[in-house]
Every structure is written in C-alpha cells, then in structure tokens.
Image (cartoon, rainbow, N blue to C red; front, side):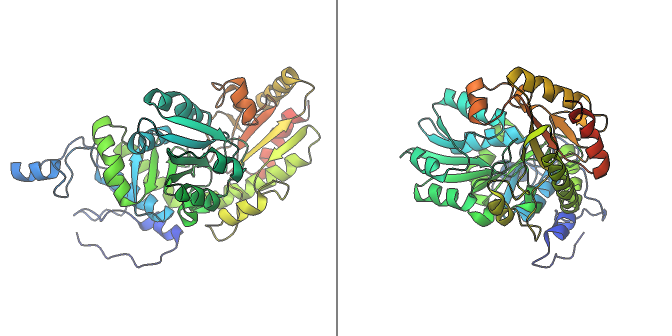
Length: 407
C-alpha cells in the first residue's frame, strides 16, 4: 500500500515509534514479522539480478529480511547515521567490525576498560589473524595518541565503560583517529541513542548490543553497527552474506518494538539510577560509587555534554560501587553477602532490563580476564554493578540495604 511520507526533522521519540519500512498491502499498524528463510522470485532472470545485488529485492534472510531492515532503518534514524546492519548479538557486531575492516598486519588502539569479552576478542581472537591491539587508559587522550602507529586502522572505545562508567572524549578520539588515517568505533550500549549519539562527535561506527536497552526487557539477543551506507555495502554485507552472523527476524521485531519506549525508559531509569547512586554515596559500607550523573564523577561535565541527546544530560542507568573490606578475600566475601541478600533485584549479568540486575564483575562479566587485566581496568573483588530498572526507588534502596546494613 502507499504510505504517507514522514515529515523531516521529527523528534527521536517520534522516530522511535514511526520509522520503519512501508506497511504491506494489508496496512498493519504494528510492523510485520516476516518469519521466512527465503523469498519467492517472479522469474529466473530477476532471481539472478537480485542474487548478484544488481537489483533491490529480498532473496534469503541471511542476506536481508524486511523485519530486520525495519529495525536497521529505525536504529540508524535514532543514531543519526545513514545506515545500520543488524547482527545476532553485540559481540557479533564487534566481530563483524573486525572481519570487515581489519586485515593481517593492522593495529588497533582500544580502551583497557571495555567489556571483558571485547578485550578477549581483540587480544585473543583477532591476534590469531595477525591483528595487534594496544590497550590504553579510557580517559587519557595522550595515551591514545602515543599508542597510534603507522598501521593503526581503528580506535575502539566504550562510553560509559562497563562496569566503572569511565567516559572518553569522543570528539578528541575522533580527531586523533582521523588525523592518523584511522577510524573510530564507539560502543554506545550503556547510553543508547536516547541519551548519546556518537556520530555527532565524529565517530565512524556505533556499536550496539540490542540485547540491552534497545530491547529493554531482557528478551532476545541482538546487535548492530550504525555507520555510513558505503561501509555497510563495502565492508559488512559481503561478510554477513558469507559468515551469517545475522539478526533473526523475530529478534529484530522484538527490538523494533522495544525501541518504541526507549526514550521514556532511559529517562525514568536514569532518574532512578541517580537516586540510587546518591543513596549509596551516603552508606557507611560503600567506599566508592561510580556513576557519571554524580558531580563527584571525574568526567561528570564531559558526560553531561555528550549524554544530552534527550535534551539534558543524563547519567544512564548503570551504577557501580565498591563495598568496604580489609583485603581481597574480605572484599569478595562482603560483595557476595550484599548481592545474596537482595530479594527484589535479579542476580544476573545482563543489563538494560526493566528489572534491576546486580552482579559481581570480577567473577562474572570480567571473570575470564587475567588478574593483571582486571587490575588495569580497575575491577576489584569488592566491586558490584547495578543496572537500575523501573522498580520504585524506595524498594530498591531497601533491597540493597538488606545486605549492606549487615556488613
């Protein structure tokens, strides 16, 4: 059916609800879910042209699917990029970035404070292909500059970082990368485009784990890269057509519907996270609180500037904190006791859910790192990560107090 074209300059909250492919001939109001592995062609000649990518049209879901295309179109609109490509998970998106962009002999500069699996992918799996990686301080721009080599192809950052919420200066890193003939990728998982659009500050690739805030209810695995259309066409589609780390139509549809409430969820969850962070700061058994929305955060001013896509600076919804303890063994014991006492929060490593989750990074999300890598990232045995959901704030405080008050 013919659909009215959306006006220009719509607010992101409107795009999150309305941006997608045109409706089918049936005029559905909720975007259609196309659960099919292949698409029937009108004739052999058309099939040949479409498989050769000489003509638009769907052929096989590993190459493209209308539901996945709708999700990609909506996410690209929210991030302010020309295009996006969906993947089976957030880590699959980083794998696709490496497989599409990097070659034997290339060099990467990466923050040492990124997600544990990201560190292992760059330091372990990519090194098997002759790709070297230098890990540097998330916040020290001079370290990034000094680490760049003639063969540096990519700078990779995550802001805020998981789990200590360190903030990098996206514009400064973009300038460094581009002056060196390299490109900048930013993992925007913690903020989502509702709070932060790295493209505005010069990032070339924006990485997403759609499993987190884009879905928002912990239902499916999904990932994406947002970038220029030429990068999708030249770097990434050739890989996914062969390697197949593509997003399933069902998962794409779930994320597509999740994005409709992204803005109001991020606003509400950020407000609750700030209240929890302020309460934790005053608790006698808490040594440090890591949250960009607190004025005490070292990069608070930078975070408020960069994380302002919603119209005002918000700290996002992840709060990490250190419990007190005399030594590593006591710190781990106290952290476990605080976590085990909760009755409302979910003990799980996922984040971005409407349900608040709590975890011990040193033994879970970053448990496969070496002790040296964990120490470099600042992840001690007393660290607890809290991804704040939509429960009432007083219930969350009481839940955390059950454990902290007994330490």
